Image 1 (cartoon, one colour):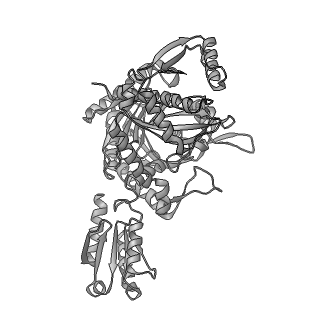
Image 2 (cartoon, rainbow, N blue to C red):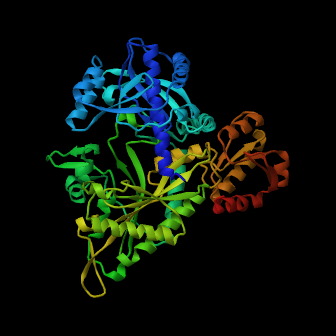
Image 3 (cartoon, rainbow, N blue to C red):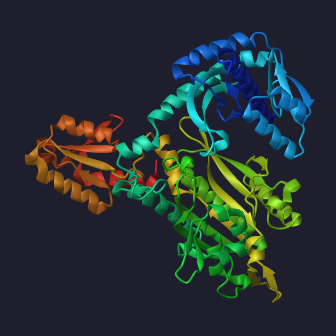
Length: 583
């Protein structure tokens, strides 16, 4: 049976082969086109081309038909190694291919051409062995976009043709259906409709501004994380938003991330950085005093913003921002406490994500022993850390995929993968084991024998980035949050103005009980008020009229359509029970 990793590689080869097919069709239809690059991507493939007269999306059907015509005569891909001179002769007149050939020659790598049918392209390889797999796969051309050569805006703008590709036609159709539904649930669209966040050109791209409702959503999530952490003995700490570069030079972050930092120069010419992460600061809180083994573990929790100089073209709603709110925590413990502390974090993660209906799959992100120059610390330290994580996974009765080369530069981690309501997989929480930063900062404790011993550091992010997590769950719930999470939990709808006083008393009783209630005092008809509450995706709304005022009752209706009349005295307790249970 092919493993999941090799299945992905096999699909990537089919997608890359289809990129060749796209290029072949383009050359037949537009013979004066200059081809550049055509890789496989997550959902298919693309090819960047320089056209004399670029096609429009209306022409995609014609190009796709030509691809389906050509592929009938293709059998497979035949590779041939050539000299730089032979390659330049083959692609004479195409400056893009010639630039690629120069780059390959400079690196001392071999130059290969791959041919299928009558089409030959410069390529490193990675194709399907049988063109029948291309014919049987599910694929279609998707859209056209502009793209600068080599992603550099100083270079020429090319035409990029995207295609979708999956193993079967059924999987393609499922993806297209999923994407259509995802477009309806787009968090950028719903965030505006539900009045959760906004962006301002005056503030800047990638810097979201949170409305009262959006802030309530953020705080509710963060309070839940803190509630779980507090039970496990965590303490809150606070740190500044800037730091001297010295801190990051000592931690190793400066050498690796200096080009991604926002820098600040003082009047005295000191250089500071806006913090891109919190862990080095927390080491200095631990380092403030000498610790005995009896005082460990020390558990620090800190929800705070970090800042990263992301490229403008990479920014996307809440998914990729420049100001990132992390619900960060770090545990400083003895080596014999590591497994227990990581187990507690694992439990917190399972409870937190269970409240939104996510089932989690762990994934071990490990170092690549062949590229030790990418990591801090020794091979022995890395192997010891990774074995600790393997033992944790085993103790939890879980099975984890091991991803070589995906560790953080200072330590291995357990990443938790979750599938949302559309079946899309996301990396959410993380537990990272770090034996390197304590070494760099010389973090110690005094053991039972009275000698100094190195402490172990555990990084624990539950949401990781609140912004990114919110982008996921807004789309997961399509904005219809469960009662415990909804910014407005109940909306009160008086039938008319003469029932407003009773509606206000109902509203106040809910507020006093800690339920997030909102009163609709508009002069609209009841029908319009109900429609408004449903558009806002409020979990419950209360209709208050003559009968309710006389009987001191309320008619409670859910957005799903269920309706119930109950005494006002029972309303708060019923809602609070559901909120507390976090259904």
